[in-house]
Image (cartoon, rainbow, N blue to C red):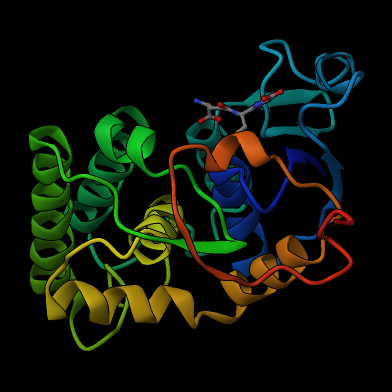
Length: 232
Ligand SMILES: N[C@@H](CCC(=O)N[C@@H](CS)C(=O)NCC(=O)O)C(=O)O
């Protein structure tokens, strides 16, 4: 299997299937194509029919769209707990909230682009952003109340649903958005997950920065290694 992704520092869609594969000990070759380089589009197009990543090559199968990749992995490895194992209702709920994530939360995604290298001052909380935050907080609390049992993740043990929301957790943290104690507890579970920590460590070691993604945001903390930072 070969997973093609872009910058770990910025690419939330790349992170999702990567976390699922690593958390489930699925072996794969990985190619990271840096964004905003002269050959980026051409390099991605060599693998992906949409010109976007992530894309997974698995024998004759070419799979794009993060959720389709996760769905393919679940088909391919039915013995692995990619979706929650508890009940049909839990799996249905996990798929619904994952698809809701995939197509929704636009205000949050636009106001707070993923950036694992910095912490920024909170943006202006518009009505749309407030509504996204309220829905997200309800979704996590309700899912954990109904399906979480004694575990720390949305469905008790780590599942694809947590992978779908992990980049959102980082956005809440990076932009210091106002959230409840209950939400913070779940955020802490993701931020201290060893597979996520591995992704973040690799992200912070990348040599590529895209300052455009920071325009309009005020940096309050910088976690990037001196090797990543461009010379003054
Ligand atoms: N809906 C797609 C979104 C894919 C997407 O937007 N990918 C971005 C990276 S996060 C991309 O490929 N960008 C390429 C570029 O900017 O050149 C999915 O779920 O996989």
